[in-house]
Length: 332
Image 1 (tube, one colour):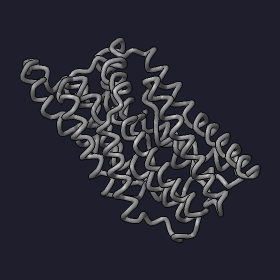
Image 2 (image 1 turned 90 degrees about the horizontal axis):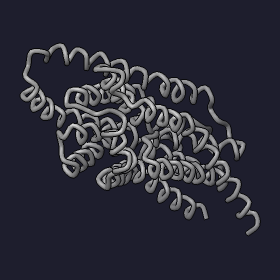
Image 3 (image 1 turned 90 degrees about the vertical axis):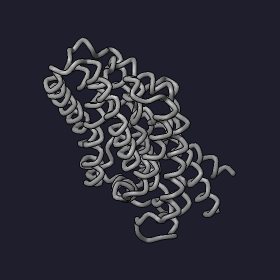
Image 4 (image 1 turned 180 degrees about the vertical axis):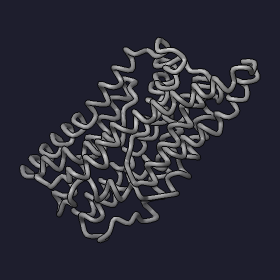
């Protein structure tokens, strides 16, 4: 029975990883598509490859998610906690993908863990949630907005005497590199969160005693996310590339460089930040630097509302799933 539950969790984790890939494909390539620096299929292929490489580089964030959010649950009910957390995260991802909202897969997964743990009376490490999730969740978008705002102003000043045609051509070429850097950062951050959940399940049933990520977990998660990224989440790509800000090569480049820098820094610190929050706020900052009216603030407010609801929404779904499955198990 334990082995069956573990297999189900690995399958669900990889399913979440796939939804994460197509849900968050927009994070890496929406700006490049919006500025026509890359064609959609070329952008997706590049993002898939860079996501794969990023997922293979480091596992620090995976250990934070596996060990730093909830206490390790025990027994079959413990595996049920992990399974319900994944159901909550996948459900939220699919809902927001359908609505075309760029929300955080990372926070959906963390919210699922918290909700399932509360329902199962498993300890939630609230200090870890505050330090490693809530504070970075608030700070990283603000930093992304501010840096992209200032960087784009500096770029416009530096290019003020360059003809628009040559400048845009050069910036579109540069966006190939900045989009690749952003996709690498997405792999560094988001793939590791799925690894952390699988390792949590392995520790729960005693198959390993530490939160070291096995090679088979790294490879399976990396390949699944790459496949999901290549599948593409066009609804969210359209939102980020067209509906929030009318992007230009300079603003797209500034947003991607800013977001990639934030993601690399937080990955080095083992902080699981949202790639979605980071790139969206950077796009807003770069767009607002030209003029505030360039940003469609009504769309931005809708996205912000979805961000706020992600943790409790995924947590509630996971908690209901856990209680429902527990009841069904007892009846059977």
